[in-house]
Length: 421
Image 1 (cartoon, one colour):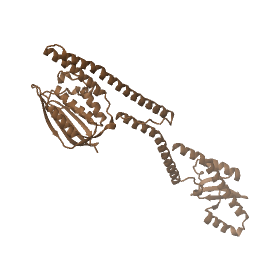
Image 2 (cartoon, one colour; image 1 turned 180 degrees about the horizontal axis):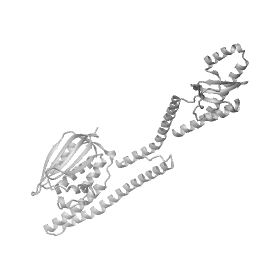
Image 3 (cartoon, one colour; image 1 turned 45 degrees about the horizontal axis):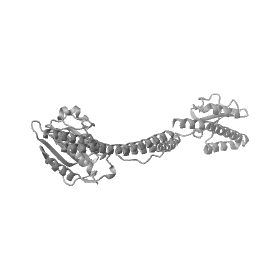
Image 4 (cartoon, helix red, strand yellow; image 1 turned 60 degrees about the vertical axis):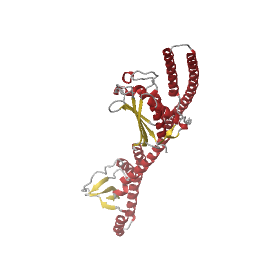
């Protein structure tokens, strides 16, 4: 806007000076010619005609006239120069003569001197309203141009953001167009390459995990078979069977943690029925006491196998670490209800135990892979992937996981899942 105002002022200056000077010269020349060639008896009517129709007044120039300086206008020096070149160097200018304001120019007819007064409105440039109108037009055009440029810049960034969000949700985004500015082309090309690399990593991981499953579990099965056939005492046999079962469980945890959750397989799941099945299975375990408050017929979008694994991991985590202090019993409370949130209604799943809990400053460590809070939750065997698997699956289901200590002792785990449409 500042550049535009300066440019208009610069471009307008020359034409306005020339136009104003030519107007003054023309008016003075025509008026002088009319007075010179008119009959003396008709001059009074001529002067009245000039005043009434053209706004031009003629006064005799007296030496005693009170004359003010010319109008204080940045264009005035150039106007004076052009007018004096045409009308003579003795031409005078004034903004007020005898207390009457106007644009005053002197001229001579033979030896007589006169003042010619023009109304200032005829010599003014752009008015404030005109400047405001032009400024509004240019401002609107500038905003439209800025909006167009902004959209051209933001559209590739919006595509990149949407594609990154799809990757975070476990989806494979469509390749980004490699066109536009150099920076956008480089960013999109690098992003597309990253997506391909991630896909290759996923494929390689699937192959490696399949190999691990085959290469490790086959020897474990052989060891289990040889153990059954070996002549060993009951104590030694049970110890080795426990070790083999533990290794098999750890391998299963690795596979569960690395297994991707495909969002394309999501369907409406009766989470109420799934929780009830898991609770009944938990009640059959020795030393388990389960209390349920499960709302009926609540549906969520997800993968039934993965959600069942999540619930079972939470129950197993509570069974291992949540024994009520001073007893051999593990008390678990499982609840399900619909809760309004800022993102709409959510299915709120809660699994709570009455164990020793976890120190508040170590709760965040629970969700990290290969982490066990042995000091707070008791000694246990495993790879420390139970809650890490839960966190990984929950995030792929666009749900929220919250871990904290319950009042009165024990650990409380909450999962808030979007309801199925």
